[in-house]
Amino acid sequence: MKPSEFIAVIAPIAAKLRAEGSPIFPSVRIAQAMLETGCTLHSWNNLVGFKVGSGQPNGFWKGRSVSTKTWEVYDGVRHDGVTAFWRAYDTVEDCFRDQDLLFVWSRYDRVRAAKSPQAQTAMLLACGYATDPRYADKLNSLIAGNGLEQYDRLEDEWNMPMKLAEWQWDMLYEVLGKAYNEDRLAWEWMQKIVDRTMTATELVFINTVLDGRIDRKIEV
Image 1 (cartoon, helix red, strand yellow):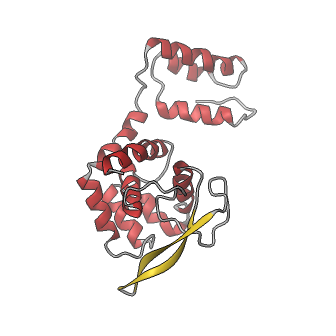
Image 2: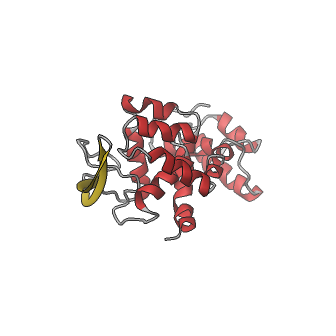
Image 3: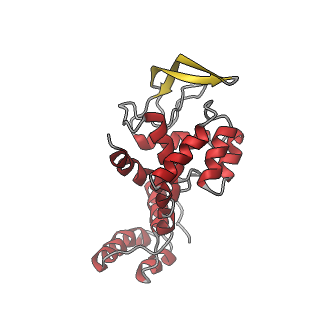
């Protein structure tokens, strides 16, 4: 697969997850997937080199795995032919969401706190995500060479009023109006539709909570 084709598949997922609160910059996530797979969409959907380790199955990883040969660097020496067991996923998005669970660990505090893609790649290496001493440099090269930081700016679009046609606003009002009439949604949310100020991030939040069938009203 050409890098441009690979990026076209991964970028929307990376941007979506970032908008939903993922700590990983889309540019870093895309570069990591490119580096770990060589721009190949494996059938097991693990694009980030996430090993089985001692983790337990969760909502995103069902416990399936595959094994391949890889290489690692220990004490500055490269070792080839190392057998590794990788987590296998139903979808690419499940892979990324499972990785985000990993980054909740205190070991990756500096990864989450990074304020730029370059700082984040440096912290991935510093926190021990990979053994390759050139890991951060390789990621940075992919980010720069493919203009991946443009996808970081999509996050801003998610937090700006949506650009919808009038009929789309009307449909949104009708659909969410049902939740309002059932006293599951505060009027302030409906007012955002009337004023055309609702953002994509807010809509994702509302849908997520409504899909969860909570028993209390969603306040602004």
